[in-house]
Length: 461
Ligand code: TYD
Ligand code: MG
Image (cartoon, rainbow, N blue to C red; front, side, top):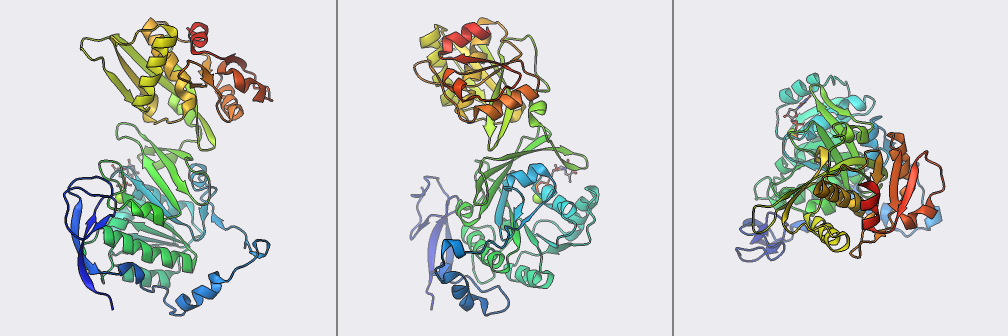
C-alpha cells in the first residue's frame, strides 16, 4: 500500500525534492518548489479508465509479444484530414489516429478558437470538446461566431478526469479536445489542479485512455511568461506531438509550429490570420511577409529560411547609426543576438566595416523568428547596407551561412529555396559557391555563387 508522504515539486520542471529549497536543483529556477502531499508511488497507479476492466491485463498480450518487422500490420496509417492545409501539414499530413498532441501558447493567442474550428473542419467525426475554463454557453457563443454548428460536436464542462473518461465512453469520440490540461484534476490526488503532479497524472491517465481507445487527443496548454509550458516541462515528453501557437498581439497573423512530432517533421509551420470570423489560413506566407517591404531604402534584404519542409521568404531590416553611448547597442528581434554579434565581428574584420562605434538594430519583419544559419548572409548584407547607406539590390534573395573566416558556407536544400524565390518574382539569388553544382533545375533565376562575404558586399551594394 502506498505510503503517504510530503514532497516538494518544482512547478517549472517537475523536479522533486524531499525538503524545500529556494533554488530548484533541476532547472535552476528560484522559488518554484511547492509542497505536494501525495501517495509516494503515484506514478505506478494510473487508474484504469478504459471502462471494460479487462484491457489492462489483456494489454500485455496485445502489445507485448515480439513480432517480425515484416509481419507488423500497418492497418492503413489512419489520419483525420481537416482539409486545412496549414494545419494538416503541421500535424505531419493530418491528425493521427491514436495521436496524443499538445497545443501550447500564450493566453488569447487563439488556441480555443482553433480547437472550436476543428468542429467545422471535421463534420463527419465525433468530437468531444471538454472545457474546463469556459461554460458550454461561452463555447457555443464562440462556435456561432465562427460559423461552426456541427451535429457531431459534443461539449462537456468538466474538470474531473474520471467524469471526463465517462463522457468519452458515452460519446466514443474520434477526437477529444481538453481545454485546458491545467484545469483537469484527478480526485484521488490531493494537490491542487494546475500543480505539476495533477497535470502530469491527469495527462498520464488521458494518454492511456487515448492509446487504448485509439482516438486522437488535443490537450490545450498555457505558456508562462518565460515561454515554457506552464507547470511541467514533463508534459512535452508525454505527448506525441507538441505544437506552439505563436504570434504577437500587434500582428494579426499566428504561426502554428511543430516543436516535436512522432508522426512527421518537426519545425513545420502553419500560418494563419486572426480575423473577425476566426482563423483564416495563409497559403502563401512569403507574400504576406514581404507585403510591406520598403523599396530603395538601405538596410533591407530578403532571405529564404527553410521552416520544416517549406521555404519562406522574409525581409530582414537593419539600422546602423553612430552611437551616443560608451557601449554601442545591439538590439535584435526575431534572430539570435549572439549570431548577430558574430556576423558584425566578421564584417568588421573581413570587410573593414567598423561597427564598434555604431548602434545596430536588426528586425525580422512580420514578427517571425528565424534560427537557420542560411539567413546569415542576408543579415550581414542588411547591416552592411545600412552602414554604408546604400540600398541592397531589391531583386535579389540572399542565401548562405557566414563562417568566422568570412567564407560563405553551403546550405541544405538549395533547390526548394530557389523555386520559392522565382515563384515570388525575384530575378537573382546569391548562393554559396559550393551549392552551385547541386542545382539541377532551371528556375528562371540568375544564380550567383559567392565564396567570400566581402564579394557579396561589393556585388549587392
Ligand atoms: P482564444 O481562442 O480564446 O485564445 P486562447 O484559447 O488561446 O486563450 O482567442 C482569443 C482572442 O481571439 C480574443 O482576443 C478574441 C480573438 N478572436 C478573434 O479575433 N476572432 C474570432 O473569431 C475569435 C473567436 C476570437
Ligand atoms: Mg482558451
